[in-house]
Each structure stands twice: as C-alpha cells, then as structure tokens.
Image (cartoon, rainbow, N blue to C red):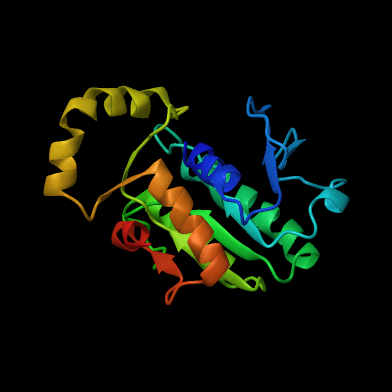
Length: 209
C-alpha cells in the first residue's frame, strides 16, 4: 500500500527522471519514466546487477503482517529479505539514500516483548550500519490510503473501509498519529532529496515534511 503511494508521487514529480519498480508481481501502471523488474524472490537479486546501478534513492516498502507467524518466519521475511536486498544495492550505488518503511512502535533496543517490533528494530539498526550515503527509517502510524490505493492485506483494507466515514474526526483528534499514502510518498521523496536531521521519522515528522 505504501509502495503504491510513493510510486504515484514519484511519477507525478517532474524532478524525478526515472523510476525502477522491483517486485514479484507485474504492475498495471504504465508511464514513460517507469521501468519494471520482475523477480521471483526479492531477497535474491543476483543476475540483475546491471539494471540496479545509477539510482539515487531506494524506497523499500515491502512488508508482511506478523499475525499468526513465528518469529523465525517473520525474521526471514523482514530482516533477512530486506538486508539481502540492501546489501545488493550498497556496492552498486554508494551515493544512494536508502529509506525503509517499518512502523510506529518499532523497538530499537531489540529487546521488547513485541516480536514484530523487535524484528523491525533489528532490521532498522542493521540498515543504519550499512555504507549508503544515508539511510532513514520511516515509522508511520495509521495510514489512510488515497487515490484508489488499497491494502493487499484484506483485514487492513476491511478496517480502512469501515473508518472512511469517521476519518475527518480521527484526523482532528489524532493529527500526529495519522498520515496518508500521499503524505508518506511526498515525505520520502523530500528526504531522499534533502535529508533530515534524524534517521528515524515518526508520524509527526512524516506529516511535517
């Protein structure tokens, strides 16, 4: 859902000359500056190095729900996959800014009681140790999908649909904890271009940008 949002904003931004979408499933979007790379496994980009160099930013938006998942499995799909992807890009794009989308409540200590938060925290910490030009961790809270964007997680989309009538009220009551796919996309582009004073951005930072 976040990936759809930032892709939309990238394609609308005239200062961005080319976008490479990397994923397991084909995209419906067509655009003159959009290139697509289909891979069966996001954690294994070997053989595609020639198509991965020359980029100034990576917006890593892939992720899965931890519901009903063991820590071992969630670690494989979160930490292992993300770090394999990043480590492939690192030597190919030393001037790259890497932006990772985790979530509000991520545990930087890696020692908390919440399994998903520990794994996300471990992933963030490992990314911050890599030798990119810069790395930033986005921790959005509740995300409102806009412009026809929908979550691939059916349960999430069910709740989004239920909350549509009360969204203006929620934004009024909790402005620091709610953001939209459009706001996240624009904030990610802004950080890739201009940086940010701190490496971890919470919902308030995202909305401010």
